[in-house]
Amino acid sequence: MHPAAPEELSGLVDAYTQTAQAIMDLAYPCSDADFAKPTECPGWTVKDQLSHVVALEAMLIGRPDPEVDVPAYEHVRNDTGRLMERGVELRRERPDAEVVQEMQQVLARRLGQLKDLKDHEPENLDEAEMDSPLGRVPLLRGLTLRICDLWVHEQDIRAALGRPGNLDSAAAAVFTQSVLDALPMIVVKRAGVQPGRVVMVELTGPVVARAGVRVEKDENGEPHGHLMFTGGTDETGPIPVIGKTTSIQMSTDAFTRRAAGRRSTDDLHYSVHGDDQVARRVLDALVVTP
Image (tube, helix red, strand yellow):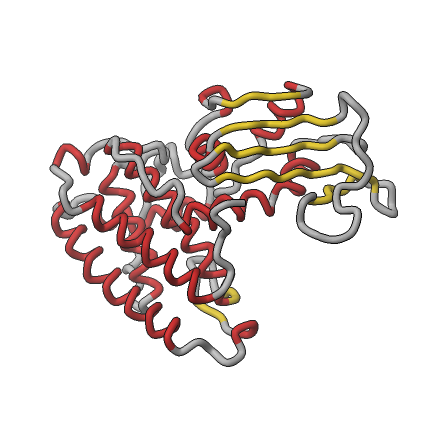
C-alpha cells in the first residue's frame, strides 16, 4: 500500500493531529447553512458531526458529558449508536459557534496531550493503554481507532460541504489498512466465499493498494481466509484455477465510503474481473463501522 499506514507511536500521533486539525479548518468558515447540511452519516448534519468529535475528545481529556436522554431516532439502531448520539443530542440546541469554540478548546488540549505522549514515549509501549468510548484499550490500538473515526467524520464533512481532500493522508492510509486487515473475516465469515476461491481488492488511489484473500479449509475442514501479500515463503500459494479468482477494482474514496457504511453497493463505481455475485457479496459485507 502507498502511502503506507503509520504503525509506530510518532506516526500515529501525527496522523491523529493532522485529521483533527483538518476538521477544525473545515469548521471555521462554515455558515449557518453549512452547519445544517445533511451528511452521509445517517441522521447527522455537519454540526452533529462536529458535536460527536467534541464529545469523544472531551471524554478522552477527562471531561465526559453529562447524561442526556436520547429520543428514539430512526438512525439510532443499537446501544453503541445510542452512546454516540448522547454528545450530539446534548449540543443540538447550542449555537453553531459555541460548538466550534468548544471543539477548538477540547482539541487544543487533546492534541497537547498527544504531543507530550509522543515526546515522552512510554517505556513499555506494548503494555500502555488509553481510554476509549468503550473502555480501556491498548494504546496503539486506541490511537488507530480514534484516527479511523476522526478521518471518516472528516470525510463526511468534506462530502457535505463539497470540499474533497485528504484522501492520500496518513489517516486515510490508517483507515484503509484497517479495512484491508479485516478482509479475511469479511470474505469468509460475512460474504461466505467458499474454499478454493480468491478475492482480490485493488485500490486505484489516491491510497494505492492491492490485497487478496485465499479461502482454504482449516484442519477442521472449515473455511479459512488467508491474507495474501503479507510476506513469507510461497506467500500466494499455487496460481488459482481460472474462474476461481474475483478481482474488485475501485478508488480509495469508493472503498472507504462503503467500508464506513456511508454508501450502498449500488451507489459505488467499481469494476469486477471474475464472479460478479462474489464481488457483490463482498462489497455488501464490507462495512466495518458499528
